Length: 258
Ligand SMILES: [Zn+2]
Ligand SMILES: [Zn+2]
Image (tube, rainbow, N blue to C red; front, top):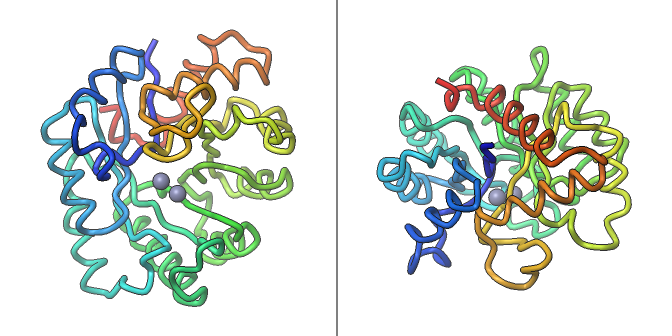
């Protein structure tokens, strides 16, 4: 059984000391492939080195909403050139973050829309980050959709109504270890209503460690805890959750399947 961690950040500093061991532990735990997500040009160059060294690692790249203010045409052109690499399977993470507001909201909106267009021109699916911005995320997607949107909204923590709107647009929804925490009743309801047909699993490591590792560094091996929680919530055999999540990931990130 192959589990894929569809969203982690292997280039980040907390992995500098033991990156190869982290990847080895992941494979050992059954999380045999992972997608590392670059948040800008420097991050993309670090991730390219990682994917060239490790056959099990693929990547996405884009300009994170935090840094939307730095997304000049030159920067996006640079990312576009890097995206031609065969192991770049998606564009992202892109979107809106109104929790931190590190970039002005109108700029985040414009850069998100611009990257949706660029990803479509490159025929790449998108990885979306939306924090406290669900209404506007849906609005930008609707405005810029040209038919069904090929992509995933990662680390989902929004309402059922938003989840249904996203699924309607054609998107997948991805869950992290946060679903293992208590006080996640609404998200648990989203899981039950959406079902495995549109769900992906991820860690978003090094952030957001699940129970029983809460508060420590997260790593791709811990995707197994997300799988276990989905199996519990959906009352499905673990194998079925894994099989469906992996099939969904490979259908969406189709460059991984070839
Ligand atoms: Zn994110
Ligand atoms: Zn992320």
